[in-house]
Length: 160
Image (cartoon, rainbow, N blue to C red; front, side, top):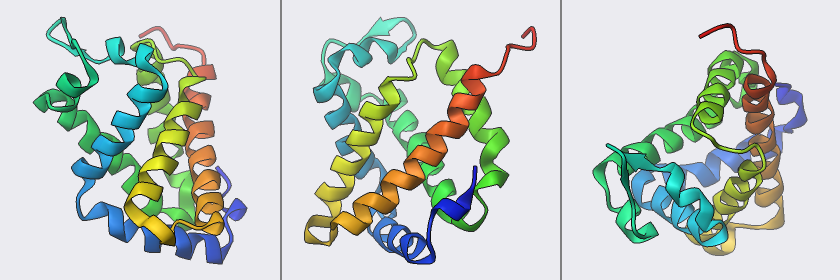
């Protein structure tokens, strides 16, 4: 993961905008996932706990287990923001995260919908501060994270 893709100005924009999100990660994460289920309702069945299927996105978004998932997702974004200068140090972690998502049936294509939902959440949170430069910086960061996760996908399973 080459952090050279992000300019100093872009890293500053990402940090600045994330400051406003990280204060309430679960609330903002719920906006992200709410949007995700709107864009792709077929993803809802991937989230089931104790073999219980959620009847609606609302039911899913209020389940304690799912709120834990939201926290974890927001922590991954937080880690990426905290390591903007050195994204390669997250490579192994993100690779393994990719493998885990593959194992539960997530399709690589779904990550573009997640990216769209992330931008929607940022825009929702930042309002007028969400300008094209901020959008471009986050898109670059998200692409780098997804590429690392995809390497986990592409890696041959080592006989788990």
